Image (cartoon, one colour):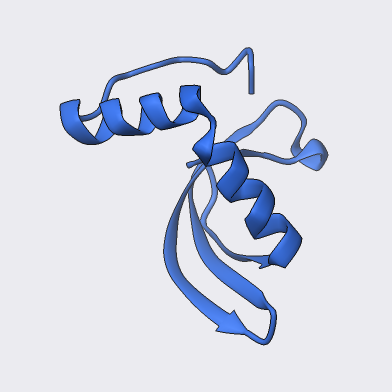
Length: 83
């Protein structure tokens, strides 16, 4: 996963989801930033956030990308300019 923070300028962070936990109406994603620094962060998704995420994933272009990635493995795509 790639992340950016406005406080870090154009620095791009690499991270991975290490755990999830449901607390009340929120799903918490525990994320380890692994490059260029090492941070342990949490992202809390409420119902409206999860709904928006599912809708974004269900778009035909997103589904096609996900299916191709699952079937054909990793494909190196540098789309930093869009990110």
